[in-house]
Image 1 (cartoon, rainbow, N blue to C red):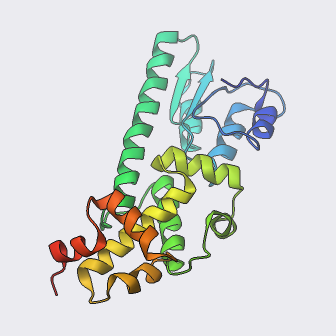
Image 2 (image 1 turned 90 degrees about the horizontal axis):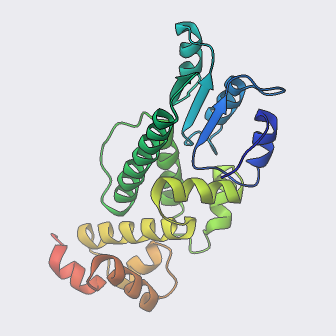
Length: 227
């Protein structure tokens, strides 16, 4: 657990380490809770982090101010620690559900779901970048960091939090999913598809494909190709 005296120190700390959840008082020197929340929720690297605001200000106007800038929960003082713990538990549980959703979306065939939340927009942007570079065997974590425009540490933490994959595994999963799609829907052979999805060696591609789909690429073609 990381404790910071005010919002400015918290922002400085988050340059090195991103928390799983933030609980903040509204009243703080230098950078108060509302400003901290606004900065967290307006930054692509941190807007997925659940944010709880604590305040002695109980008016509806103040609560609306907190929620309008992206706070996930607004709790008025004095408050029950049990209520705080339950809110923390619920927010972390919601993140688990989101993580499962995104990990399934990456592994399975794409769907036509509406993209509305910042998390969905980020994952969609990430998947589009990888898809555009899918045939480039030199496209790796370093290249993705450059393309996405955030620090390596922030990208690692956000991808792990949202998908349960490392960044390298995310790229590999996308390559394998594309390979499965091509094996099912085109007449390209396994060797051609190996290079089309950015693998340099057929043997390694076949090994990773079998780990994911429980059958070799050739077996997958026989079971799924409809052309």
